[in-house]
Image 1: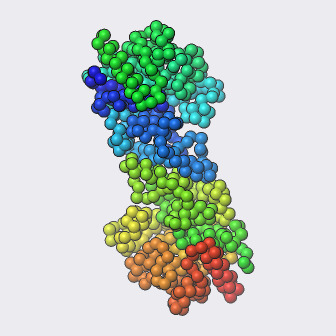
Image 2 (image 1 turned 90 degrees about the vertical axis):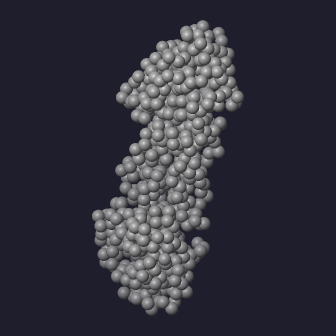
Image 3 (image 1 turned 60 degrees about the vertical axis):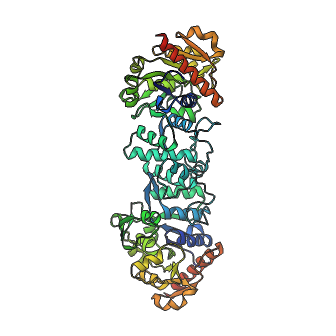
Length: 317
Length: 317
């Protein structure tokens, strides 16, 4: 790749993690910083659970479960089975291996470590090269105002399977939360090659990150190209409730609609070749690419396309 | 069985649990109350772990691991493996199924339930008929003064494999702990058939129970025969550090020596046929039996022998 310099990637879980892995495979480890949404973190069974952070960590470590998109590969489920026998709550599935992450993280957080420190320690142990950081070490909790009232994120997402229509979204704690300092330093410092907004749900995976005080401004002022990748292909999300939620917000789900959602931030946008007809509606320079990431080669190819788009924007300005 | 009336059995882990199961198999469920030592309970990885209580619960539920004597049968170890990868502490082995007990117990204790309530709920779910209760809902912690200084129980027992010689034993918290109220009510109420001290380590499994304020006196004054079963056969413990510890306390490990340790409490004592020569030295009426419990039939036979011994003492008085 041409370029050099640091790439900061903002990401939620499944879809974002695929591109994050692609970036990790085409960039030297020290040139990638992945920022994870922690708005859907929650306490469950007394454990501190960080779904997006873990999906990213497992993906970058090559431990992710390709069938589910979350959790670990080669997982066993004895804990969950035994918990059910004891009458415990089983609606949120925690695999036996995955559980070690939550138990050890909870222990370390209680002992006074920050989520960033715990994540860094885990990544070191698991051989993750690029930096992976939570968006903040402070508590932010995405809550959804639905037709059934306010619901905690996982309650809506997992227990209610995204069924209740969403009317409003709140990021509790965001106004008082401090963005992860290394992320802010990276955005404000020199040597930034690009900011990449991964193909994650804008409403619940990316906007919690952007809701942190100063973060949106830091991205706008970073001086490097900001490029987002569409999570929508042909009017539908590859996975998850993105299209359904956009509709509930009165937004026709389209690649261009997501670009407009980020309009104050973007210098460029990568959308699928299938959505070529919408390119003009995005409002920013568009790169067409194959954005459906099935194989590892797909992830790498999209990562290269995104970096090329960013680099061309830099040369253009 | 002749008799009828309630049998209260005091027990530690492995050896005691074998007899407790034998008693559970020969008595109607409502005629047995098993009291578990909680002196070796501890907090580990942020989880509330009650080793003796769980060994008893799993044994009574038919879920115990016959190979190890602790933990659950059909266990898997994915959690422990993953925890090791993350750099977590792996010296105390927690199986995936067993872990559900600790996670759910910890959650319920934090939510304000007592250890007795949590145990009762688990036993109900697992189909345990007899009542199983912790000796106290308050925190008691067995600590050992060894040649290497004071050690927490599990630190000495598991991590140091009982190697450091023990000079003194303390039951931290015992003076202020309240014995489990149902246990006290059973000892003080009418309808008691016998108190059985199971073949557990007297120093670290039974004496923490007896150290609770009022409990020793309640047993002495209960009016029913009190019978102990020797954990020593032919000068050695069937399992665990009992013989080694007795030696370190200057006590020649023998069946009779254990009887003398309980002398203020006992009306009768059951020792192995192999120790017949020591019967006179026990200081109380002795019943000889086969105390090595390998099969389920052994457990039942010993339970019957213990109850018969108690019933004969009742008739004698």
